[in-house]
Image (cartoon, rainbow, N blue to C red; front, side):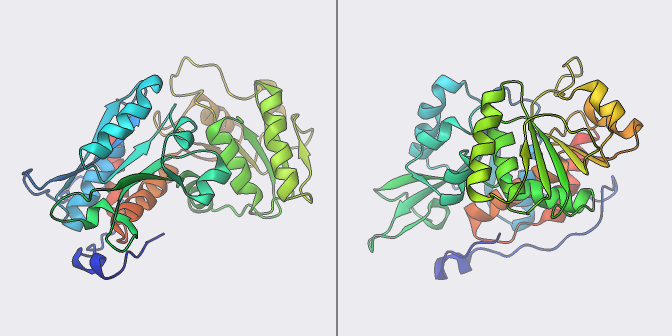
Length: 331
C-alpha cells in the first residue's frame, strides 16, 4: 500500500530491508536523539496501555532513518474531537485510533477516504497541509513550518489488513468458503464487508444485538446479492470462525461464541483479532477441537504498516515491524 506523494517525497530515505523472525540476538534499529525537529505521531485509545503499536512503529521509524517518534495516549471518547484538533495544532504527522474511537472519528475528521466511509470506521488519520497551488499534501513533507491551512484526513487500514493476515497466518483463501463472523460493531462490520468482497460461499453473522447483524447483512446483500447470509449459527462446520469482538482481552471475559456450538461443530480455522493475550479462550477452545488458529498480530502488523505508508509515502519495513512486535509481546 505504498503511496507516492510526488517529487517532494523523493527526499525521504527508502527503508533498509530486514528478514527473519524474532531473534533476541538481533539488535533493534537505533533511533536518533530527540531534538527540536522531531516529528510526532501517536495512537489514541481508551484503554491504550496494552498497545504494541509504539514498539512496532518506533522500530520502523528508526529503520527508515526518520526523526520521528510514535507515542500512545489514553483519550476518553468525549474528548476525542479535542484530542484530534490538538494533535493537528501541534503539527503531528498522523494518528492511529483504536477502541472505542474508530466509528466516532468518521464524523470528526475533515476528509474521509471513500474506503473508510464504506467501512464506517477510521483507524488512521493523516494531517495534511495546503500548498500554494491548492493541493493537500502530508504535513511530513513540509520541512520548515506547518502551512497556514491544515486538515485531518481519515483512512481505514484495518479492512485490508484482516484479509491479508488471514491469508498469510492461516494459509487460507476466503473465496468459496463458509465464514462465520462474531461481532457486528465497528471491527466486525468492516471485516464482514471486506471479506464479502473476497466472494465467500456463505456468511454467518453473529452478534449479541441481532439488529446490528441485520444492518450489516443488509449492506452485504446490497453489494453482493449472490452471497447467502444467515444471522444464526450453522448446523454444519464452517471453514473459518472470526472473532471481531473485544471479548478475550481479559481472560475472565465470557466466550464470544456459543460454546456448545463450537464443540459440536468446530471450525476448520479460527482467527481472533485480539493479539494480547496471544491465545484467547476462544482460540484455545477452537485449537483443542482441531482448528488451525491465529491471533491478531498479523492484522496489527499490516494495518500499522499501511498507516506508516500513508504518512510517509515509503514502503514500510514489515519484517522489522514484525520482529519488534514479537519482541514486545514476548516480554
